[in-house]
Image (spheres, rainbow, N blue to C red):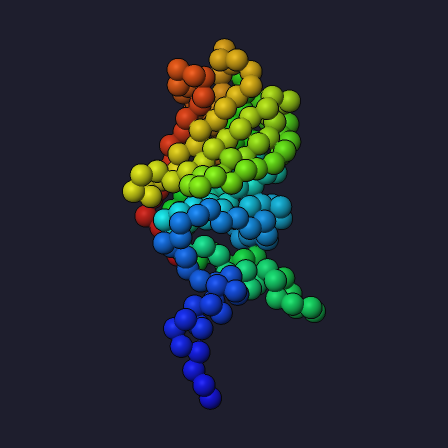
Length: 195
């Protein structure tokens, strides 16, 4: 039997979607079946440096973040006649949030109407576009310096007088501060990962 060698093995792992690309230089994206109660239409995003997250367009926000490798798609794409299972995360989860409508305008207790409208990939970030109660929002997500968290920047098309909130189950609502240009900013800091 002839061995694959290091290059052949690496190529095979990349093609199978299981290579732990922690040193990757560009944003990766997969819309697939993900674990931990993510909606079936969720996005797996791999940022440069090995910071990855699940963005759930149904609940309107980041559901969880993991570090290290990206995902193993084998369980979600097993072939004809096989049982489909969630893709496998290739690193420990370092942040998690639950609850519907994590971003809210005005009254933080009112559940919003969310409509996902698209996304754009950038060199080191991804920008999601959606509406909250009919108000267009652009959200740009990138890894913090040193890969210690995520920076989420929101561009609201409603002027600068409305108050915006992050609402996560089990935590108090947080008003999203705005910069001088009216953009909102949230920082997510990672905790020690769990496998």
